[in-house]
Length: 283
Ligand code: SAM
Image 1 (tube, rainbow, N blue to C red):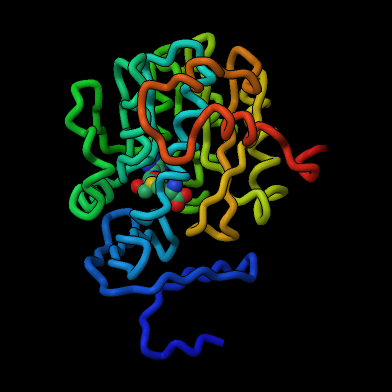
Image 2 (cartoon, protein in one colour; image 1 turned 30 degrees about the vertical axis):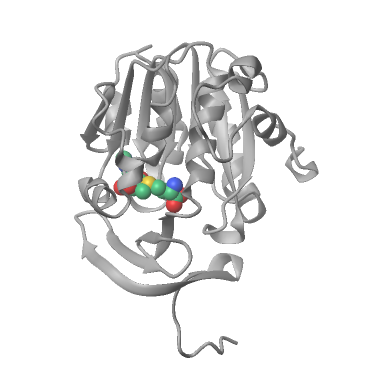
């Protein structure tokens, strides 16, 4: 029972999991229907700005660092020398900013289907877009599924799939056919990572099938890294990483330990810890 009648709240009801999460809202800043999805922006009382797509939390100023750092740094420190990175989705540019912190990266391409997400991020989350002018960054607006089909074989070192939930335009990003295209686009030691929803709510329905599809697509190894993410259903989220050349359990520990850039969550020990698998992940 909510008794705080003086306050406005945004609530995402996740009815399949019988749970909901609310943030207190100061004001609605923007709302539009893009050609692909309904985008809303709110100012919250304690979490900074909030972006919502089709009724689901995408990010808040306060807690997006957890997700963006865990979607980028583990994969980049797993690859021996990541030079060419493709981000599929990720229109808020937070993942792109993290990727560009790696000095080895020569080119980082973000492929989001919806340019409006990026334009609104530039306005309401300018700190996430601060590296968009980096000469190594390229923003392309189009369907990531088609882009991957057309990608030159062996042309990418790391693929990061920073997508919305597996419905609507993102549904095809969770399929074996898409992973086959990723596998072909990656170089010999290529690594891909996919946002893979909640370990608590989606282990059987999404995470396990994702591993099967990645292996069936030709990836030699895969692992799911759980991490906290307060604004997503259950507050516990995950990134599933797959390696073309094998072993995604080892990473460049020394480089991660001596990283040349600032992070707020990620470090070598967090990476190592996220590789420890909960008992219910077995089998
Ligand atoms: N990680 C966040 C989450 O799980 O809530 C999502 C952040 S990011 C804003 C997700 C992006 O994926 C959106 O900007 C959306 O436009 C993009 N997207 C969805 N389907 C896509 C596709 N087929 N190709 C490229 N981008 C896509």
